[in-house]
Image (cartoon, rainbow, N blue to C red):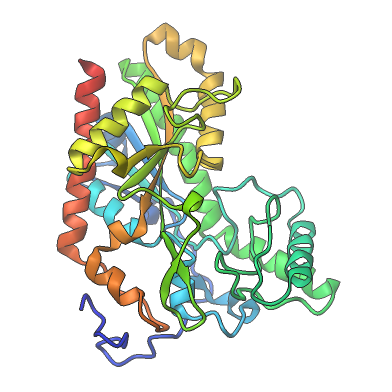
Length: 378
């Protein structure tokens, strides 16, 4: 069933619970992580000239650099490894980029456990890690813990299962932080620099051609969390559940309007038009697409929104809009019913994407954004 049989064992007979590691010394380049239609025959410059949506995938990577394996908790199986990512976004966005010349996509090749690029970068990573480990220790094994403000690197997963082995002393903690920071430069750092460079190149192209642009931070989240045996079948609290397709966020309220005079990252009327376009593109009912519920949108759109406000006078003079929006898709929806059913059963492995399902989703993304363009142009 999509690369996995019904009892969760890989069909090729390999150890399906073993963590997936990148070879020691793996260093990514911008070309490794940027995707667009006609890549290989059409240059990135040509792609940017024809595009108006920059898609960033900060949590799409899953394979862990082997240099970090010694810091991981032994209970951290492949299923927990992949569940702690948005890896399902990778296949969808890569396919979307291949069939839609109006977008360019950039993907973080490292998993979020190395450092979450959708969180503010810590001023002192070791200090934040120390605080995070102390909070986990105080809460007790497997207990819910609030890591707000110190969760750029988490010692536990979102289901509060062990992720990192607690350091034995300050020297071990400093070594952990230093190793994570050094290794991050080989992938995560490349992603952040490439994402920011692409954003500036999109702005330059928009100003030169008087074309509005959007930067889209693309994510997924499950409405279920994981049991000790690996079954992802525990219902999230109602307040944390995603709609049936996607939540679109601009840091505003449920109508996309500003909250408490705080700036939004995408114009409210345009966000509502984007939501309507997604309902059409995905052939979904109204309540399958929500605005700023349950998430307001995080660091990527906050940063982009700040940059766009700096550029607002020039954008206005040139008659263009610069918008940033977060899309948080329901992971069960991106997986498809068959793969979601496999992961609802106990196990330690992961699934393979269903190519036909991925293609349908990518085409729906393309259609939704075409519908949006038509709506705002008309």
